Amino acid sequence: MRSIPYEHFHPDEKPFVDKAAEWIEDAAVRKQVKRTDFLDPRQAFIVESLANRTDDALVRTDGGYAEAERRRAIVSPDFLDPIYEPVGIVVLSVTSEDERVSELEHGDYLGAILGLGIKRDKIGDIHVHEWGSHILVAEEMAPFFSLHLSQVGRTHVFTELLPADKLIPAESAFEEMFCTVASMRLDGVVSEATRLSRAKAAVPIQAGRCKVNWKVEEDPSRQVKEGDVVSLQGFGRFKILSVDGVSKSGRIRLKIGKFA
Image 1 (spheres, rainbow, N blue to C red):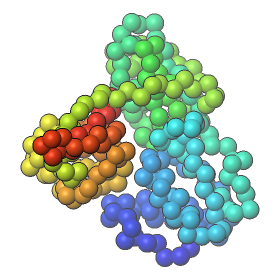
Image 2: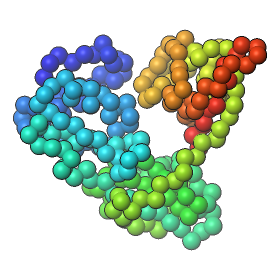
Image 3: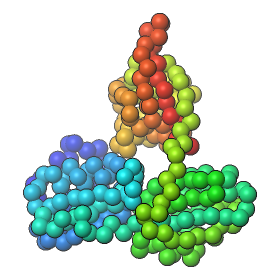
Image 4: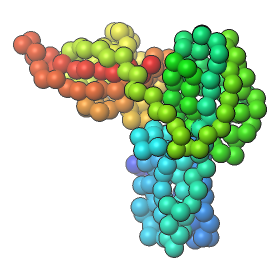
């Protein structure tokens, strides 16, 4: 494989870039097929961008449904179409007879599974409903999840394994808010979304605790735009849903969706 363009990636991403480059080399040179764990959108982008640097490897990503955020990747040699390789994703259906199940949130389900000693990489998107949840998981770990997941928070639950095409997606659970900013600087937008002062918002950004579209961003003056997803450690995640013009005072109107 050609030399790796590290200059295009954040230094913190180097371990994953090296791993992705090894997968692609295994496919291109050793003619091996690799099925990855679940990747976030930034990691999937890295795999695809490195694969595009060679004609000898192909990549397909799949999260179990068309709009999936977290996806597994199939990396294959060029003579094997990855579309025919099994992606290995099933639905872990979690239900309960306890009325308190309707109060459970995304973090409750994720925390319960991680509490079993499992890494996040084995878990895809989590769809929360009033009656429980449909969780996309790695097929090879699904029996373990089904056997050992019996409680979420203080709620006793039942589990069932379903094929991915039986997924019931949840509607997007954004908490919408409207605000105005002087500019589209990252620190200013984060300040409005988190109710921190601009100076206080800049501190975690400069400390590497902020991501824009799943990539670490340490520059508070970075310009963000409509559609960007921003996360700040300890304050959750939000998406800039729309830029709605300029107010009479010259401030930019934004609609922001905070993830539940």
